Image (tube, rainbow, N blue to C red; front, side, top):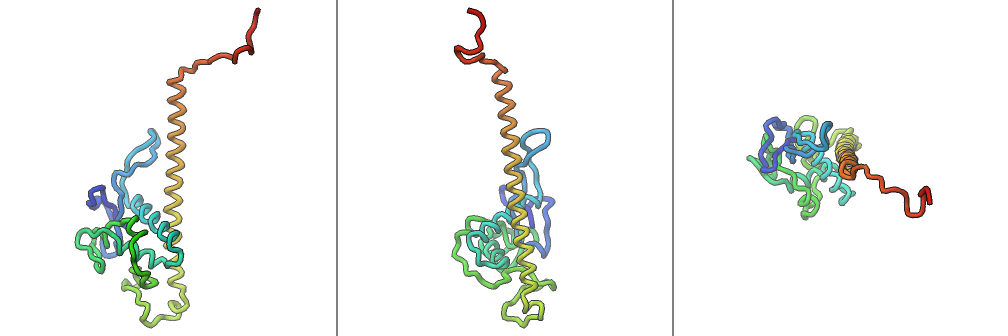
Length: 198
């Protein structure tokens, strides 16, 4: 997974190489901070969360797709960058920058069950090629699918946790502001209650 900034430029510390499949936003991301409510950060972890969230949305809309077919939608709808084409990955951008809306709405055939996922020896899966007993039983594809789904679920969970943290920080901040601006004024008891004397 690679990270790009808001202009689509690759982050200077991003991953790169033949293994790279996709890139996603990962620079100047707003995150919760320790000493103040918000800060900004950069990293491929932020990019991975974007891709995992997009994959989870695709799986939710198209529950019958395999992990490879979900990846296929992300690859086919990616915004091409560098030397990337639909059939050839760029070392820094992979097949391009993810576009979640397009991945959810584009008219794309489901395609191969393995999509663009690689085999252990680095080649592409071919549904028509002879399969080993393990592949014929579906164990490899099941493992790949389980890993992909687990990554998607973890990414969505992390985004939810981040959202909760941001909400808690914002609520505490508003409470502090009310205490400071309210001046701690005690309005007194309601009329007719708690009054002493005639």
